[in-house]
Length: 617
Image 1 (spheres, rainbow, N blue to C red):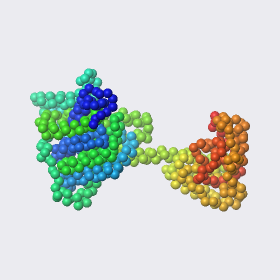
Image 2: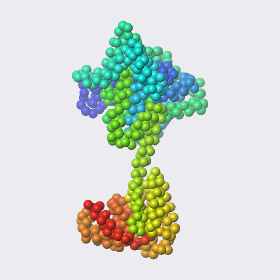
Image 3: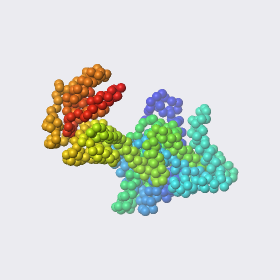
Image 4: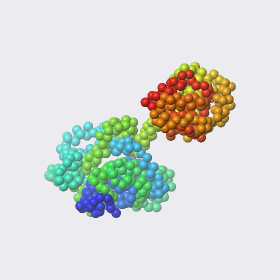
């Protein structure tokens, strides 16, 4: 089951798996999960035992299923407000039915393979999500670290932190608790530098042992964990609760739980996958596993569960490689809560809070912000926005806003357009390159108005360098061309690339000032034999003679050249120009021709030959 690659390690059960590491990692996750389970349950307005039951299900049910390897599930802080509102509105007895139906919906979503859509998430959003979880976690746990109660929301916890520090050291007992928590945080940072085999013992276990010894000293009165009867807390939903599903408000709660729990679990999976180099998450399977876990939680009347970043990151940092560690953590929760509640009562809460503060710092990753600033400032903005919104609101809202910011950034970058306009002799020229989308429409309109008001008898719109031309920009350009041609006062030349969206226009009648030979319909398509075909030598190292021959051949075609020369992968609408550079070819099936005057521009040959020399170096 846990077969891996590499050589067999001491204490391992198979190749590439160290059983000792998996067990110690599970104990670390257990120590991180225990205060979270209790804290989330209390904050949700439910008995603390219900949080432990959900943690047990997250380990034993979800932990053993295929999906994610290292992701750990349990009651999550992101659902605290929603659970509290639901319990207040419908009662704690209805919570089990709502969680049960949400689990069944999650299983259905996974079976129709909707889980993979959550893979489309920017790394900036993922890092912003981790930081947005880590920062509030640090401040919220700084209060139990000193045996105090957190004020409430993340913003309230941050704003109240200075006063909390002053109050902590004004009392001897809270100061002792705070010193225990701070010692746990420091030990977590420096333990990896301890030499020898002692380093294999997790720092969290060492901190818990020290905390138990200090708490047992005479005169020390710090708060410890208190867990009641686990079995007595189980509440199976009955017919009356299932009848409540006829209430639209209850169905709305079911749908809300499903969406938020699924999103948090799979967004967390994307984040956890970036923490390790092991097997990637199977999103559909993980969604089904989360649904199975919530189904069991609903049957037992417990809290809803999701994947939790704090526990998952602790699992990864402890060196876990398989599903064994997260499964065992559920077993530890169950065993200690049922058989050894007196042992749990010896553990100081401040020590467990210190473990969580260290996990929050690792999630925050302050070094990631300057690194992202140096690499990509646009992504830095997305990352910062995601973090800020999560801190100010909640996890799901922050991720959605971060995704929206990432989409806006991608749209702006996809709309990198260069629009240049100038007047050369009797011709007003507009040259456009890049991706022309509606986001750049104001710039395009300004350029069109500039060449239209230049007062020249000719206008040339060169779009040969455009790689994408959306409907808005295309319509604006075509409307401009139609208006100018209808005025009978200016000749307009439009060069469009052979883009997939380009369609051949219906045939036009020759303008009065155009000759039959100059109209696009009457102009014969030159045959391959009549086209100039530069030799390979002339293409790679053109001599003056070959350039003269090329331009001479080009002038025999009723085409005005554009610059830069078309590339082999670009099927341009100026077929003769393409031939002059690269040899015989046919225009693309959607090439468009709008030439109203075949007479060469004054001084065109000299200027284009000079540009050819610059281009070829």
